[in-house]
View 1 (cartoon, rainbow, N blue to C red):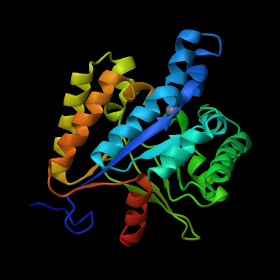
View 2: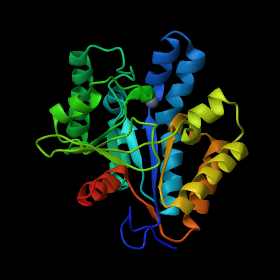
View 3: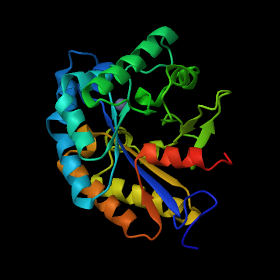
Amino acid sequence: MSSNEAFWPKGVRCAVALTFDNDDESGMIDAFGPDKMFYVSQGYYDTNAGTWRVLRILDRHQVKATFCMVGRTAEKRPDVVKAIEEKGHEVAVHGWDHRPYFDMDPIKERDDIQKTVDIVQKILGKRPVGHRTPDWNPSKKTVEILHGIGGFIWRGDALDNDLPYVHKFDDGKNIVELPSAVTLDDYDNYAERGYSPQEVFELWRDEFDVLYEEGKFYCLTMHPLVTGRPAPSKALEKIIAHVKSHEGVWIATAREIARYWLSRGNN
Ligand SMILES: [Zn+2]
């Protein structure tokens, strides 16, 4: 079987999303406080160098990716947001200052998401349609809040499946969940588990091989401040080459995959 039309468009066996979270220094400040420059300084690598290297790699391999922007990152570096958009990638939302929502007041949560939508819209002249909560830690209300703000067609907050699924709403403005996994996250593998770039590549390759065999959805969650570093960037190049060496792989932005999933009609 070279395709899996039960789930995917004709001729496609496995859909692949390359996603990057532009935490910049905000993720480090959220985790370690504003004074530990050892961490904060590593955060700055995102917009100073990491994102630019990632963009060069994606260009070289002619694949489109999704970048989830922290609002503060966008406000500080509109040039980065514009460069991502100009290369044909998707810009999505990743909170305002990387504080997760699980214990946040819902009014503040809504404000954080809206502020980030507004700053991206101001920079690009069009609104983002996707969202990933910082630290994959949404509140129980996040999907309703996204629906209430309007315009969102996907979110990437769940770690509970190998295929997209749909959050349904009475007005028909449904939101596709695009699940990922901690094994498919660069920060978890490099920083938490201490894996080498070669080990990360092998893990990501094995995960892909199983999902490809089953005709499922493969969603890498990366950070320019991690995967944009020189040796990890080689792991990114190698996994893109491995994925592309297979027949019937659809590498697309999260927006394209969500649009397709909403169009299937049998969700
Ligand atoms: Zn993040």
